[in-house]
Amino acid sequence: MNRVYNFSPGPSMLPLSVLERAQQELVCCGTTGMSVMEMSHRSKTYLEIYDRAVAGLAELMHIPDTYSILFLHGGATQQFAAVPLNLSVNGKADYIDSGNFAHAAAAEAGKYIEVRTVASSREDVYTYVPDWKGKLNPDADYLHITTNNTIYGTRYIELPDAGNVPLVADMSSNILSEVYDITKFGVVYAGAQKNIGPAGLAVVIVRKDLLGHASKLCPKLMNWQVETDNGSMVNTPNTYGIYMAGLCFEWLKALGGVEAIEKINLEKAALLYDFLDQSKLFKGTVVPEDRSLMNVPFITGNADLDAKFVAEAKEAGFENLKGHRTVGGMRASIYNAMPYEGVEALVAFMKKFEEENL
Image 1 (tube, helix red, strand yellow):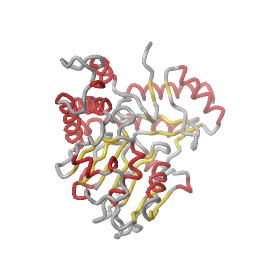
Image 2 (cartoon, rainbow, N blue to C red):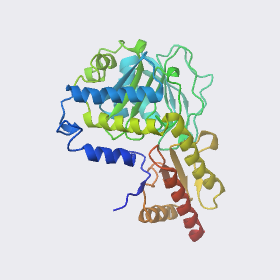
Image 3 (cartoon, one colour):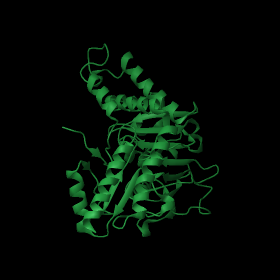
Image 4 (cartoon, one colour):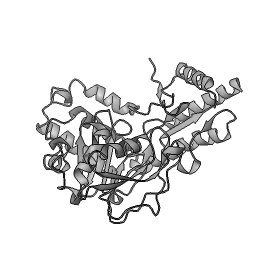
């Protein structure tokens, strides 16, 4: 059976060469005589796998030694609680509400601290990144943003400057897709299932001077200082997920790193957006200046026609194009592993569908 073009927002498609290598090593990894899934996480062989993954991410994102890199359980959603429990000293933080996950992060943090939503585009269905300028509080323990919004397809083109207030970013849906200066952030966290590896793993990158301030309420497994002291192994980590992440890091490095994939992602996104901008049937739902490189929502304006498109696209080998239930329409998630040829084929199909349905 031929592989389809999988436009899922997550878990998303993985690089084929990574899957093929994992397949080769599934039963017996190297000369160990066992699968990675069977290895002790304390064994020398597995610790080498873990160390390679940490080093691979550090190299790709140019992360200095002043940051701790953690591979944790629970995905990004668990970090919605971990952030305030680790960072809030004075009991208040600023949040920018630019999408469902940004809103959820603020709601979760609000269980533990005073959350001040300094800017929001919720009333306009998150079709743009809200203006935060002049609204940030210098007494905040941190400022939280979501750099890319999976559901609504927006992204920060410009990062907020909060001065001495640490910038915390949920980077789940665009980590490793474009170049960031990591030193602009106090904390970056991300679920793995978009650009890192399989679901069930979270990456946390935290500046070391921010460690050691966790609330007494913070569970041990969510305490970044404790996890740093124990090399992300307070309990048994997601050993296979970390191994797969390491393979994806190697794949990306071989392509030329984040700098190279950013150029490819810009080309992929431009191809799809250029078609949407001139189409007589389809149209995008996000203001052009805030468009995501990873998640591209679009509609026809007719729910029945949207459903027809999704069904016929599936038959043609384009999977998971149905938009999120809160938005409707369609959404093409074009993460790192989606080749340019996949977007090219999708645009060709959209042109054909347009000709047949106008």
